[in-house]
Length: 449
Image 1 (spheres, helix red, strand yellow):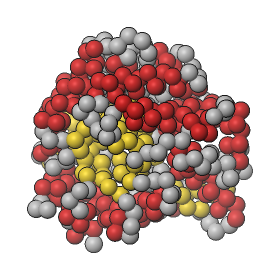
Image 2 (spheres, one colour):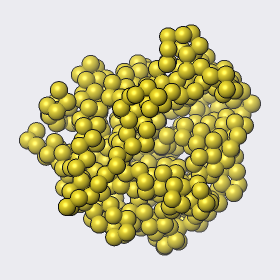
Image 3 (spheres, one colour):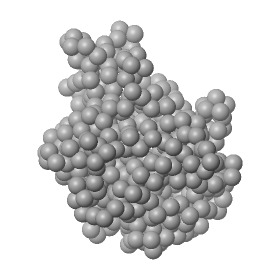
């Protein structure tokens, strides 16, 4: 049934685009006054990134952005989501402004508009200035002030032409992978980091929204949360309770404080300890009336109770153990999970619109005779889009879809080993080749409405 998808089924006002992130594509890490980010530092530590890759050049988007935007237009996409490199415009995180960095984003925005592509700015997509990490990073409550200063600058410089703003990208990954397990930059480990980082991210999420609302007339403001439909491995009470704890962390942790519901300690009692980081009026400061919520869904999660994991008391049961279909990264392919998570989020009274702000898959691409026959990726997109359409037809107010990603890129700790792009990049030559999945999107989006 998914093969019969038609763009017109989604409606003429449904928004189609791609999503990217500054550190993953730009390169030019030492050019034109850019300061170091935590990912520059982290990727220099041997063994942290697969194959010891780094993003010094990445996709060279800093120099090739016109070419890549032309490809996006060619494929039929009318929306382009990118993030601002905080350290490119404020090398020390605060204080002195780097005009050359500002100039780059102005050129990028103007080129989008020239191509009739709508720009979407993500304010924070994981690349904190190293200078701020040296001052405690997300563990330091001062970051609320640092983030406001940064947001004020972005809105002052770009708010005259950019209406669509995403405040944070996947804050749970920042707190969990960056400051608890140490798998992502800045590589901090320890559960004691988790709660203050969560709280400061949540405060910045709301404060950033208020700053954009104040400074950009007519802004369309959201935040982007990673989310996975969570299923218990068995019907046992312990597994069901484990699933509730996982759901609180993966799906509820950052949206509910913004909606005025507080942290979901009802399902995960450890979150009651966040009280020690709360100051007077914080409950009000956590709240912001977002115009949309960005849903970023790549896979579903199956969990079971585990005595071996203190505090969480749960373990994931990977797709491989369940003989479930999976991507090259081992992530379960579960299109029904997209439908379920959209339904779950639509039940919140405070959510107005939903944008699927990221969705995609990594597979083992093979370039042969100038072609990449990535039929698995095409099928993935078709199946997930079909379930988004199902949700939309069943009353979920989903307004747009941003595919991850336009091009292959530096995929964080996976380096260049994981390819998500609709466009293949040879990272030795920077040659671009549109994959068959990209060609499918071009046919789908350019078909008569």
